[in-house]
Image (cartoon, rainbow, N blue to C red; front, top):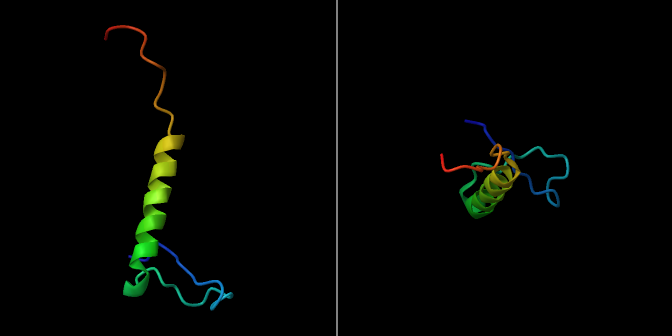
Length: 54
């Protein structure tokens, strides 16, 4: 789906080879997605605090 970009900046500083779908890099991809999700959830405004019973 071309939803992500992952590059090895040491071997490919010009960012020509996208490793997002490369099976060898799935662990890195998963870790980045988890970190991104966690940061998004922590930054989300959940609204006013509940002060009453309902």
